[in-house]
Structure formats: structure tokens, C-alpha cells
Image (tube, rainbow, N blue to C red; front, side):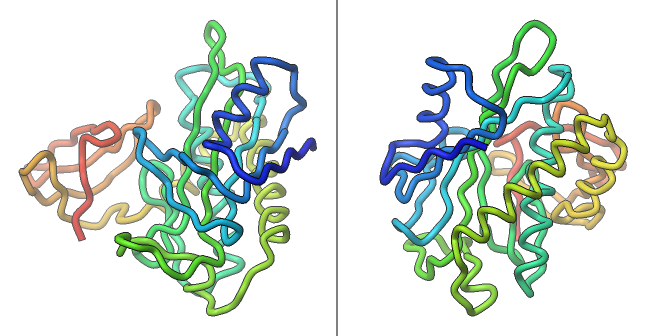
Length: 242
């Protein structure tokens, strides 16, 4: 596995994407930065990270034969890989908040940004950006943010956590390459935040009660409403309320 370490970059996803356009990179090539000056999250949201305290990196993943209509499985396996590592390392309850945020108790501890390159009917490769809060203890104006050190009350070795993540991601990539879709679906729903639990949601300014009953093949959230109808929502179309 080829690892590129940089002191600072605007975005490790952008950095790795430009590398892919210039060269043929080996699978699981990794770009890791001490600092991202313009880190990005889902839907162009910014990602804040204190220099040298957290893990901010992007990984190139090439899959054997993944059809475009199954590309949300990349989000599922990456989420499950992070979930597996954090469950082993932290005493707090870890869960996956749709589509791929990782929560420690009810606070966000890790964000994932996946950008796929498609070729005809297949996913050519994926650039998976991960921002994991490890040893940062203060998050200004981010009351819903947490970190590994806040959850376990101990300092973590960044390199050791990174190695664990790489092993877990490779494991789940192998599972996806083996086309074990049902296994992935079951694990993902088992760890999905508020799955099967009546909860409050908001669309625009309208609040309503619903229950998450699944995720579509395209990655849309399936919510059963009070009248027992099921509706699907894309990213940023629906908001969770505590």
C-alpha cells in the first residue's frame, strides 16, 4: 500500500483525485494530512479538525466489478469498517447515522466523503475521505461533535488507529468483492442509528413522527410514516431531530 503524507492540503480527496488523473495508482493508495485547510463533508459541508490531533485521510479503492446501481455499498462497507474499529477501542455506544456518519453515543465522531468515478456501467474507482476525531477535546460551536479521547478518556496513537482502520476497510472491501450483499445489508441496518425506532424528523420546517425501516439500493432513507406509508428521502432532504 502506497502512503503519501503531507503536512497540509486543502483537501485530501482533491489531492488524491489529482494524483489519479496524473498517474495509475495502486489499490489502497493513501493520502494523509496533518491539516486540511478546506476539508469537505457531504453536500459541500466543511470539516473542522485541529492540526495533529485527528486523522484526516483519503484512500483509493478499486473494486473488482461493482455496478453503478450498487455504488451505495461502498458507503456501507466503509461505515461498517469504521464502526468495527471504534467499537473495539471505545466504551461508548457506536452507531452509523445514515448515510455514513459515525456517532459516539449521540455525537458525531467521524465523517466520510465518498466520490466515485464511473466508467460505463461500473464504478471505476472510489476516493474515500475520512475525518476521524481522535485526540481533539474542544470543538468550538459544534455541540454535537465528539472524539475518541472524550469517549475513552485516554490519548490514542494516531498511527495505530490508522493501521486498524486500513485493515478493517480491506476486510470489508473483500466482503463486497465476494458479493455478500445480504450480509452487508444486515450488518448496516443492525448498526443504523434509530433504525426501527419511532423518531422525530423534519423536512423544511415541517416536523413529523416516523420510523426508519430501511435504505434503498440507491441509498435513500426509507421512513414509515404514521399512516403506515413508506417514503424515501435523499441526502439533505430530511433532518433528524433529537
